[in-house]
Image: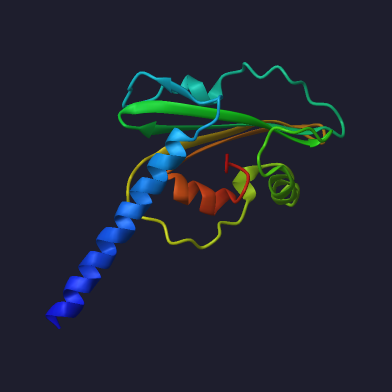
Amino acid sequence: MRRLTQLAVLGSALIIGMTMATASAQATAAGPETRTVAADPFPPVDWLGGDDWDFHPRPGYRVLELTTRDSFNGRWRERSVTLWCNPARPGHPYRWAACNEVSGVGGNPGFLTPQPAACPRIYAPVNARAQGTWNGRTIRFQQTFGNRCLLNAATGAVFRF
């Protein structure tokens, strides 16, 4: 019985170590659009709700500017990418999957059905924002998730960049 307990503890430690190493590797492999800003325990309220979006709604256009902001090593890190579904343009690494998922809910990521996932119970908040135009309608979405795993489970490929 003691040997089984030791193996369980060792296995848990290996999984946690691998998860931390993967998160560290993903953080260092971030693209050129990654910005690190000074540590702030409470991000300004205006960063998610500003009216600086200059893309006016056009019939037939399906374009979303996606932004995530998370805390990493005591600093806030912000990443953004534009999801162009119509007209189709590159930019999002999983554009086809993300466009397919968002098209099913009328362009609003807030209506996506969360998928089951085994996420760690580590609180590393991630703010997600989507704003743009979807078939002539203005889309604005913002939500804070407990960690990036919960964000990916709730939004699928949309915020996976």
